[in-house]
Image (cartoon, rainbow, N blue to C red; front, side):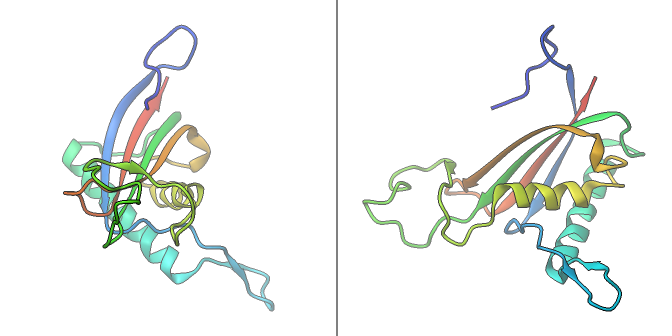
Length: 160
């Protein structure tokens, strides 16, 4: 997994920032429409998660010395890490696998695309000016390694 770095065939990408968002990843909730005003209302859980993600991004920016949001093309690599099931029997695909394992199927886990959308919206105005700047996205939905806790790992790249 990874972007192609500085080849003649594709864009040149430069790593800028890494953000760790602890806790279980939350998907972007569907907006609800108010009948009288016709306005879309984002669910409270999504709003709170986006505020938390923005706070984590601001902390990462201050630690890396980044002052202002990026301008120009941006790439994102989003890795959503979910907790392993409490009981893993011998027939389960996680049996005996200590590292990260791709999470396939449902099982009450949110769609990867909705998790990425929540992260994009949270970083908008903080790490980059507008989510229209995002031109490369790479995502993964995985079970945590045995020693890890649930989290979202975000890498931000400047595309030149």
